[in-house]
Length: 99
Image (tube, rainbow, N blue to C red; front, side):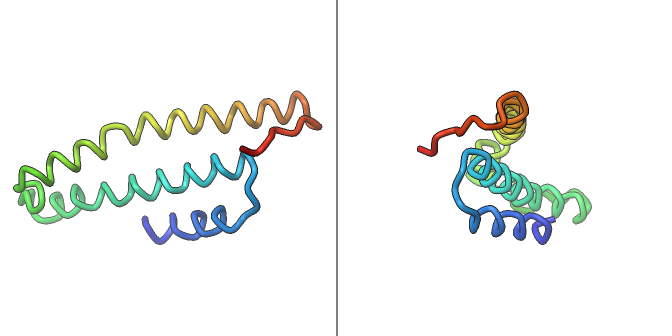
């Protein structure tokens, strides 16, 4: 799955900065982090449920801290890009300032 997340990330990092582009950048980076966080779970499931990295307390703490907010942040970013698209449809000539 990482092979499918790197090209969009590279694409949006090379684009000229705008409000929508910056949101798309954060979306692709969040998607990449979600894919990276899934690898320990996949390796555990494919290894007959051998805990692997989850046998270490500090890894579990770090993984839990990074895994928990990612789905909520992804939903928030979808809401944000939907709002930007709605504003663009309602007022097509409105320029959102870059900051």
